[in-house]
Amino acid sequence: MSLNKNNPHALYIKGSILFMQNNIEQAIEFYKKSIHADPRILDTHYLLGIAYLKTNNTELAAKEFQL
Image (cartoon, rainbow, N blue to C red; front, side):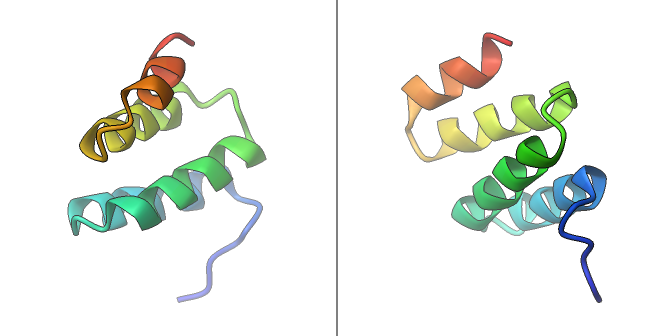
């Protein structure tokens, strides 16, 4: 499956799939790409924060939750 690297929704979905497969580090990368493509999608910030919590990175998680 080809992934449009500029589509924030496709990047968000790919990150969510990786998250559900417990590939947290890869999910973080896709969430960050999604936010870079469109920082206005708040769900992506939330899930990035959750992913950061799963990696015990509470400082970065807090930044995502403060939006």
